[in-house]
Image (cartoon, rainbow, N blue to C red; front, side, top):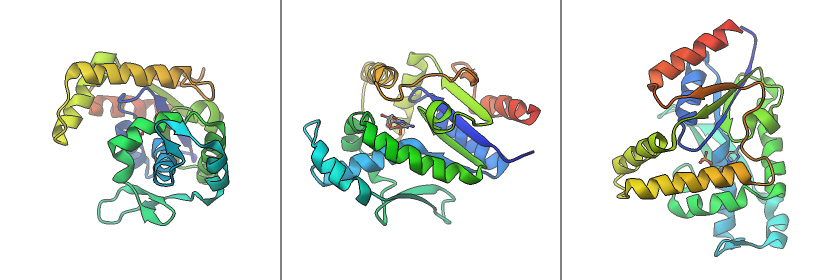
Length: 226
Ligand code: DC
């Protein structure tokens, strides 16, 4: 099989990262979580007071953008690709609730998107990557050989997310998770720059009634047919 770029886009909690990691493992490709990059920029903005009470100081952000260095590094113990911000491993911190509640504001900013898209395209220069996000098949790699667009019913996504949160010891009601998912879908679909859209040539995967293994088998068959 020739070297490919595989773009996985879709709604939040639709299982993008699980599928993307599965494909990467099957093919021996690198997996890149583009959402982690938006989270890392958000963490930087929180730390340096660039975002405060949901308001972004654009002048300060523009002054700092060149000093934000984001890299992925393989952790040989866990086998996971981890996110590094200016030489510091921030893989856990970028998943905290403060970052989560500010990341949609930061990811709307065109200057931030321009910088991160350029880094993502550089990472993809040698192909053999699976990247997941919201605009990978539409903006980052419009010529990707494989594009997958993932969705699932909102309630099912909320139930999956609730399970994940409960496993981490976070107590929250199903209703609150449903509301949060609706809000995130709205923001992702309605943002002015690079809104979440299915690329015309993307394979649609609605996994509402599919197990993880079924999804992987299904998509690997499609990839192998190429
Ligand atoms: O996939 P995630 O939840 O970790 O993404 C975090 C945020 O980043 C989410 O608000 C959507 C945004 N994002 C984006 O705008 N473009 C991407 N390619 C990936 C994520």
